[in-house]
Image (cartoon, rainbow, N blue to C red):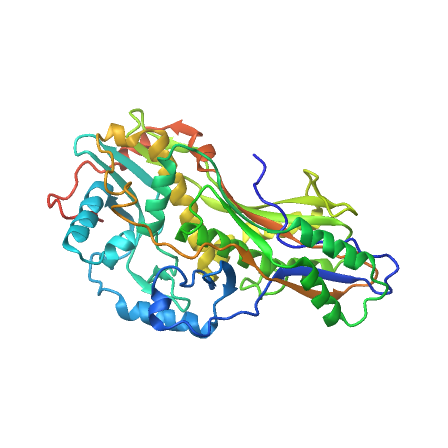
Length: 464
């Protein structure tokens, strides 16, 4: 399926009469910072930072100031529940009973209590490798690596020893409700210049006679293009899961366009790769997007034990062609330089996820979406004779909400490069969990990993 996204940045069809054409990259603005949010706002819903970005009440996507991220980290750290063994211990097979987890959530809600950290952070699970159905106890159990957690410098909840973001109950709730809904569609996000903005930008650059002052030209381009629209598909746009998609895509493109320094030595910006070429770009627009890739899911003969294998995030690319009219056309082909950058992004994604937790959060959201789709596709609730009445009830257990991101300002970063046409980059995130879960293989080894017993205490919803 073709990714549901379109260019994030504008591309201009430069006038060949320019003495030194301007390679202009229209991108997401860094100008707006949080300056008035108080401490309560930082830890409340609606406007708190995710991945270093936030959305104001008007739906404008903005960067969170470093100072505000630090305040958020301190506030969250101060509010964490103390951890003790064995919850704090690292293990390769932490099990989480969804039925017992639901009971713990229901008990807290009935008592009017806040959900414990262990519940909100799914007992420190960082990955789901197995899904087990238990008809005998009417339960579904998730299993994978887990450990104790802490707050990193950006306010993200991560593992104490690995630094990897933990899975969140909030994202699981959203994924489960989407998967058990009436419509089964991919999850996606994109940030697009408006057709009117592209038309204005085309007209501006076509009438340029000289590059002039790059700063003045860049400002004129920003004003011509105007704000860019954010589109989210397949997931509530006010959800934390949706915010993660947008934030990860935002950071990926800023690294590609050299607006943020790459935290990984082997991943240079795309602009630096372009600058190393002897000739300029033309009106072909590189387009990148992130999506999950897994090996076929293993299952046992009875369909009660399932194993996710080889999960990773890959970067894909394709080029759009920008005609003189400003219309974007898909070519179905990838440029060699853009493909090289996509390959580097895929190769170094694990390192990037370690250095920038938002990329780890994206992988978590992808995996939770896949697990939720697996539970729904294989009808594991029917096999377990348990319908998840509380977890699937959005009125009973509300997921966190943020101001929906609607648009983002454009920033144009000028760079001289001989006689070249100006260009832009685009991309997005595409998650099609249904496609991944339809590929399965049968194996007797999966059943061997399925624990035969559960804790005798019905309130014990996780165990090692």
